[in-house]
Length: 349
Image 1 (spheres, rainbow, N blue to C red):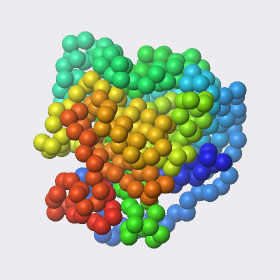
Image 2 (cartoon, rainbow, N blue to C red):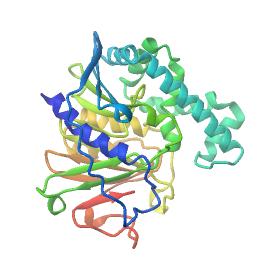
Image 3 (cartoon, rainbow, N blue to C red):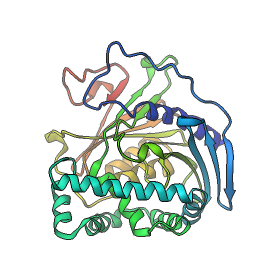
């Protein structure tokens, strides 16, 4: 079955993501670091509970326990199943993220942290946090896929978390962008020449995110895309890491120090976590994903990765409101001694 292939692929990606949580984006590995030889957990998922449009499993145990959720049906039905099967966990995750972001904004206001955009902090100072995020919603809503809001509504109705709060939380990615690592390796760089893609979430071990890992496998109703696995957190429907039944996969990292090639950012466009989900939900080829990225109303500065396991091809993307430049190993940017070209490997971190 396609869904079982999706789960197998995403378990590997999730393992890489969990192992990368403590990494340093602007550092480098120790030459004496021990390789991680932990085996991939291939144990059978354990059934926890089910409802009309969803079934919940767990994988692993102890600190390595991960929730695996399958949902199917309309966007609203899938959101409702998510909120029903993980009601308390969704409440804990979303409320914890909101409290954590409030603290981050407070620290930004007093100068303790400086990762939030200046224009956003001006909005917070003038109107308050809720309104500042609502302005982000207004700026992005015309470019948002028509399935997102019904899914958020279903999640809100079932979990009891305020609908507007969930919407606002899904805007946070546009402001923080995350700090991560990724690569796509193929041809001579892998033992059998097939594509190996990684995305590690080297981001924020102090926040609540690490406590709520979840793989959500979507089985949309006919006409609304194909099966795909979204690797993220409970209560989160955007995508930063994922893989589809069409063997399409996504990676993403934030850009802390964009050079002049990125141009200006914009707040008017599709949230990048929504665009990435569109790729794994709707696109069946690397070319269609590249076309989606090129033609999108883009917003913030990022580097994306898109892989097609059918073609064994990977492209890195310099992504901003102004540009969408695609890379293979031999035209990789930036060109610097600390970022050497490696045959058949596209990487950033």
